[in-house]
Structure formats: C-alpha cells, structure tokens
Length: 209
Image (cartoon, rainbow, N blue to C red; front, top):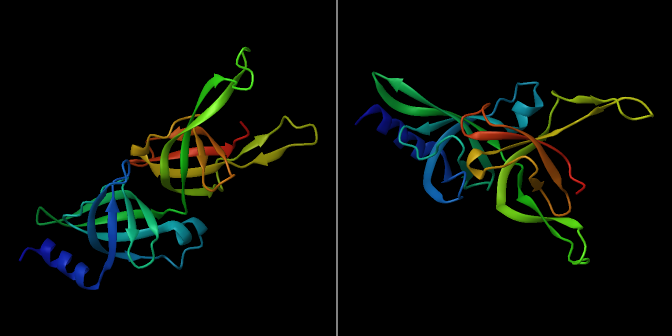
C-alpha cells in the first residue's frame, strides 16, 4: 500500500469527519477525514480563535476557496491554502490552513430604479438583489490598516474597518452589501483578491444606503 493511502486510512480511523463544499456554488463535493491542530500558546487572538493548521489526505477534493463543515460541531471553515507534501516525488498528504467562518449571512448587489412612490419623478432608489445566501465567511475587526478620520470638527479619531474573508468564487464586488445578521448591513469598499489563492478579503464599513 502506498504511503499516501496509509495516511488516508489513518485519518479515516482517528481523524475528524467533515463535508467539503464548493466555495462558489455550495455544491457538496465529498466527505473526508482530517487531522488539525489548534495553537493554544499564541498570543495573537486572530490565530487563536480562527486559525487551524490541518492535514488532509493526498487525494482530498478540497481546494483553496472551498468550505468545509465539521460533522461533530457543525462549524464551517474556508480553506485558505492547500500545500501538497511530497515524499519520493509522490504527494502523500496536503497541509492546509483553514479559517473559521463566524458568519453565514447574505451578499446583496445594488441597482437603481425609479422610486415606486414617485413614478413620474426622476428620483431613484437603491434596490438590493441577493447574490449568495448563505454566504459563509470570516468577519473580523482588524488591528491594522486603520485610517484616521480628520474631517470631524470635534477631533481626529481612528476609523476601524471590518474585514470579510470570503471564497473568491462568490464574486464579491465593490459597492455590494453584506448582511451577517438581519438588520445589520455593511458596504463593500475595497476587495483584495491576491492575498490568498482563492479567497478574497473585502474591507467593509457601515452601510447607510
């Protein structure tokens, strides 16, 4: 038996069962078993709360940008990186990094139409159409990249943005609206598409449209 098959069998015996879903469509791809490690010694709250180092089988169907869900807890994670481990020129396992999804909200896209309350006027109102629901991701405040707002008469203050890590295949765009829970709205400002292979980082701010 090849080493990769042996590792896969060990993971199936002692590993954690999960389901793999396509990051874009949400289609179920596979049921697999993995091993993971939580770094409880780190002082970085982001790594402690959201970051897992994992071992996937060599023939895993999970790719960067896909979503996995643990069978035992129901927790979902975005696969951020997938790194094959090669031994004697053969892939024997994949070392993946996954981020925990703490939101499964709705992504909406704006368009404008004539105000239905004033059809004979030239007034337009924003209409939001659903793009993806549920839309799994990691929504977090950042300790970095915060700007200073200097336009307020009562003094300068730090303006903190929210960051949403979301699969690239979802196709999040600038001006989109993300609703993590009912009644809470964020507007997409900047989208960083090249930090991770198949995961976008969207900078969000309060949406008052």
